[in-house]
Image 1 (tube, rainbow, N blue to C red):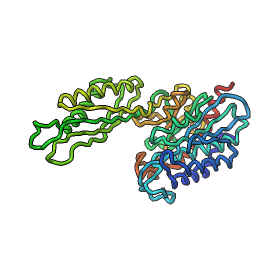
Image 2 (tube, helix red, strand yellow):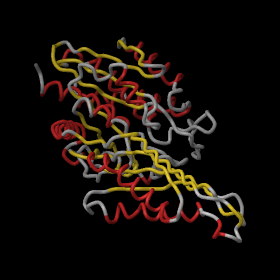
Image 3 (cartoon, rainbow, N blue to C red):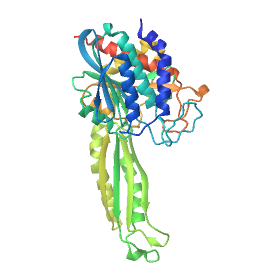
Length: 390
C-alpha cells in the first residue's frame, strides 16, 4: 500500500495526538509529560527508543534490508503565550500554548512512525526519529547532538508547519531557508547628575539613543543590499526620573542574516560603532554577543529528494515557492554535522480561521495538513534510503 494511503488511514490518529499535545503544552527543557506520551505511543508500536537528556527521545526503526540511515526530527516544546482560541482542546496549562505548531510536528512524526513500522519490509536502511526539546530557546538541538542524535546518520529531514503557506502546499527548496538568530547585550556607562545641569554630566540616554541609530548604518552602509541583514534593538532601559541625567543605559537585541561570514564579522562591526559612538558623547560602552542559532541552509540534493517526495503525495502542484525567512531554527545545528533539509508545510486556510501568525494567541492550523506531514516524513525517509541504497 502507498504511503499516502496509509497516512489517510492514520489521519484521525494523528489529529487526536495533536489535540492531546495541544492541551498540555510545556516549556523548553520541561517537556516531561510530552515525552512520557511520546514514549507511550512508541511502546504501542513496538518502536525502540532511548532517552536523550531529560526530555529528548531518539527512536529507531530498522528496515528489512541494509542501507544508510536517515534522521527525521520534530521539536516538542511550547511557548509562554496565553491561548485566545475557542477550541475544545485549547491549552489547559495556563500561560502556555503550542503557538508555533510543535504539537503538529510531534504528532506527524508519530504518525510517520506508525506508517514506517507497517512497511518495514520495504525500507532499505534505518530511520531515526528525533523528538527534540527546547527549539524555542535554541538549545535543544545541541542537547540532542550531544546525546548522539546524528551519530552515524547520513542525512536529516525536518519540517515546520507554516501559517503563510496554503494547506496542501509544501516549500522545500535548496539553499538558505531561515536566518541565523543571535542575541546581543550593550551596557552604556555615563555620569549622572541633575537634569538642570547637563554640562556636569555624561548623559547615558543620549549616548544610548545614538548607539541605537548608528547601529543601523551597518545595515544600510556596510553590507550589500542583496545580502539581507536585520539588526534590531528590542529593549532600551536608561534613567530613573524626569529631572535626573541617566548614568547607565542597557540594551538587548538580535541580529539575523543568511551569510555565515557576515555573521562572524557582525560583533566586530558592532563593537566599533558602539564604542566610538559612546566615546563621541564621552561615555563608555561594552558589547556582549551571543552566537545562538546558525542559518538554516538546505542541501541541494536533500531538497531535490524532498520535492520528489512532495510530488508523490500531492502531485506536481504540491511544491510551492516560498521566500526564505529571517526567523531562526536550531535545526541549523544538525546541518553543521550532516546534510539535510527542512520543509515548510502549509497550514493556512482562511475559511477555517487558520490565518494568524505563529506565536499569536489565536494561532491555528488546518488539521488537513497533518495527514500530509505524516506522509511526507515517511515518504522522505523511504525515498532517501532508496536513492542511496548500499
